[in-house]
Image (cartoon, rainbow, N blue to C red):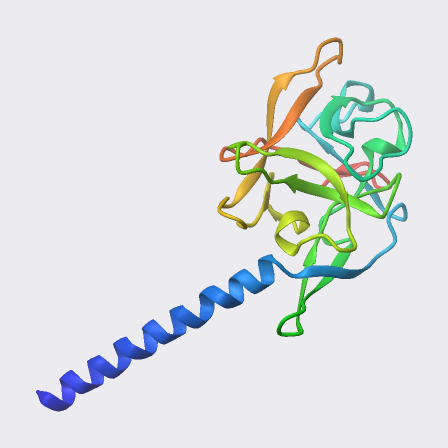
Length: 206
């Protein structure tokens, strides 16, 4: 019985140590700075639609809320399809980033949704300690934090990981924009809104 107890104690200690080591590693990844990205936005664009509408003139799509090319800080909304490059994106898996946590020189990789109209910016979570539903905006890739821009796709939901006290959040449509023809403000919420990836060159949902 003593030998068995020692084995259980050893196993318990090992589990505690593994958990203690995993927490810093996860935090390191979340706070790693993006140092470069690969992929060429524009070569295979996607639109992200709110429904599986195949008539492009009826599509409501993910949209960079700007009059010209999107820049660092441009808000992201939904909007009726206009044909603008600001409504086309490099899909998840088409552009990958590499980030480095400099204190340990540890590297991480992940996927982002970058703008076809400006490949230097990608969909980002604008974190704020006073906002329970942070804004969805565009942010420069280089120098950004891993957890603020790396996107995970799960079917029709898109999420960013936890960092700075805010857990996993999902792309969520909220209040309507006046005179937008179906546009809505986007926030990072706890309830995902569905978005359907529309492969522009092949005219098919993926």
